Length: 357
Image (tube, rainbow, N blue to C red; front, top):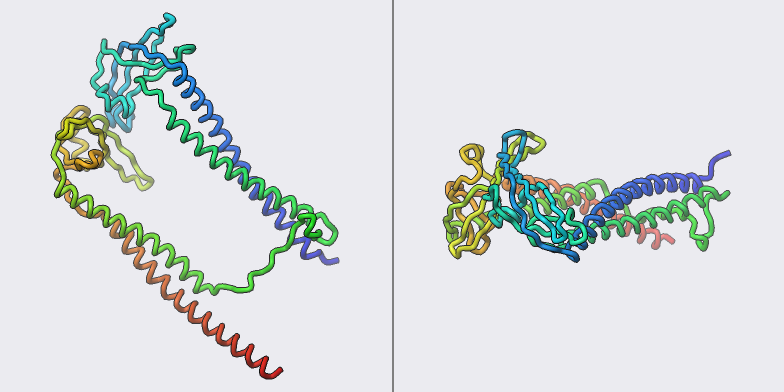
């Protein structure tokens, strides 16, 4: 006895939907854990902002861990401090300086210096350095995760409904049910097919066009930045705050600096930049270094010895994009030409049948 083909198709659809539902469910579970984690963090941030009190902490110890020593990949400023809450609770804590603290000049802290600390009135152990109690960042992160969770939940519901319909259709005797009951309905094949050469041409042309746009836009942006540094760049002396190294999968090491400097208007600015290994090896934390910055964008900086010019990778991307565009145009042209010939042949055959009928 042969198996009902419609029932077999429904069973395959049910199995496929079940696998997709399991994958979406796992991702949904992961995002649920993240939402719970960031939800607790956001709640603590709001509680601290609502019951915030400010105290003055005294620095007991400062330790500088330079990059490349003791296994540290980047410079770490570590210090211990103590403060007393309004209810008399004495809190001892330790922390590391972030970019905001470095912008305040706290990298020069020493034993006996004082800093402001914000704590929750009902729980002094919930505290942070500085007086910033903004919850905007935490709110945005939580909102982003909730938005993704809602999208995944909608997808999970849709897949679950598809699985249920296919499952009911597979269990029915004839492999299908009435449309009114919402059972699985076998999809209709597309009336028009796309040739392999046309599909290949579209894929190559699309990839090439995207890469070409990225390459051209990046080259134009790099050229504009070089022109701006030549015509508007201002010289300044910066202080090295953080030195860090990162390695990619290929083992190539990048050397980066976080520096602080004063603009011509007397404003303090911080920026990051990449440097060569020789320059990185010759520097230490709190060393001065000559830079050039853009007055309109002080975070855009470079070394005076930097030789302007687009990175080689941009030229490689642009060249690869041009090759992909050319490689995609050829099979796409053949595919369109064949499609036109087939269309004309079909019209001729149709006219012939009409004339002979």
